[in-house]
Length: 376
Ligand code: SAM
Ligand code: SF4
Ligand code: SF4
Image (cartoon, rainbow, N blue to C red; front, top):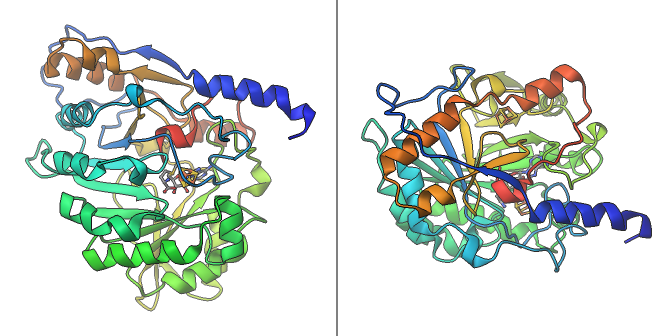
């Protein structure tokens, strides 16, 4: 590491150690008639993303660059993690406010010990309609081959696997952990075999890094029942040295695919969906485009994120969280906590990506939370 990078890195590490949060307060609000709160922009709360660990066995350069997340990085101690009981209680309260989808993420969620137990508990919850939650998980796939059956047996519905290249050299350069492509593909096959579908594969596209892998990835997954989704490289966090010129707009990714395989837009896409889906004209499946940079989709964003240590973030680009632990760890009833959470959602007015798009392409120089801390 060069001398000149020492000071900013030091400061970055300090910031990562002390995310800014404020406690959520219970309110005396009866909440009558407001079971499903809307935020200030009229958006309902539907999707809770739960980070179960801030640790990962990969060091993807766009997420946890090794020079920042080195062997001396201060990951959260076990004592600060929410317990499975606390996570399940939180999810139950949120489902009472309208949440229907629960996504486990991280860090690498399959590193959290006994995760199957949490999945079993969460799968027993019910939405306001009395249906089970749509319970899913995002993983780098490294431990999937060995865990797929146990995850399915515990009650997981489906899975999203991240894979940025089919070429081993490119993939290993990106994951910076010498992890081979073949093991992730084996994990995807195991997940398919046990019925954890429909499976989605996320590919973060970085111009000049892995964009040559777009067509090989499309050819490989076409016709397999797996939906490949291309994600624009995002300016999330403060550590990944994001630059607009490394973003390959989804429109260009789509053009490259269309050069080989004609595509047509999928009609009737769900509100709040992050990906715009296009089907192969010959019926051999579909692909998705997550264009958070070039086509912001804040307008119907219904997602809330819960960090491993109990901070709530109303936006992926938030610089401040809301600490749930004081509420969970004092003698408050679920109804009191629900009132505090309803108020938190009602005050939400985040639309970072849309504002960034309107202001141009530069990022604001504020402290933002890391993706590996709150999950994707
Ligand atoms: N470790 C798991 C994984 O990689 O799937 C779950 C956590 S990871 C933070 C969730 C998703 O965020 C992954 O699909 C990853 O590729 C994506 N991601 C991370 N950093 C990103 C960035 N800067 N831009 C776009 N996507 C990013
Ligand atoms: Fe780990 Fe996922 Fe981040 Fe890669 S994207 S470093 S696998 S948390
Ligand atoms: Fe939602 Fe924030 Fe992303 Fe907009 S920038 S889509 S509000 S998480």
